[in-house]
Image 1 (tube, rainbow, N blue to C red):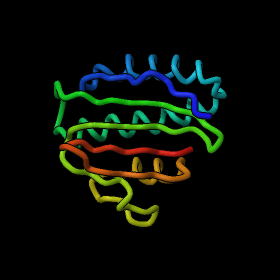
Image 2 (cartoon, helix red, strand yellow):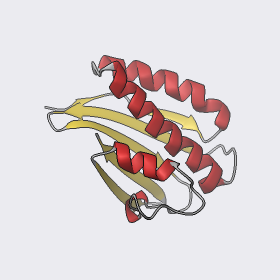
Image 3 (tube, helix red, strand yellow):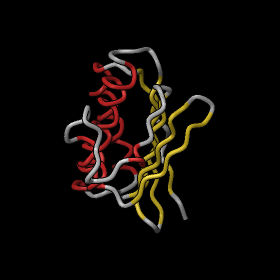
Image 4 (tube, rainbow, N blue to C red):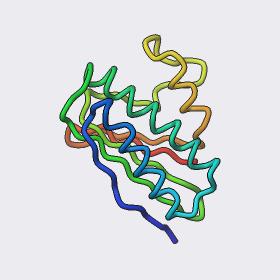
Length: 130
């Protein structure tokens, strides 16, 4: 049985990060996630959010970023959707991160169990399993 939280939507602006993190923590708490799991998820979410703004949009944008969180018997699932240019996180490995990224992508890859990506109707749809 899956337990889903409400999707969060914010603009792709650096100033939205505190709002996103606060709402995300609130929703994660309603799923009865352990504090350590919430912190790990927030770290991954922050990396995805900042990278989308910095590398995807080239700075602040009014474009929406949508985040969803769910939990089921297989684990915790983070859904990250944006309309930045195509970026497939699954095309990288721990040994082959993009040169522009630094440590963010290896960190995300190391903290997740599985990542799925699809480009759908102009959107990057990334699903991460923990």
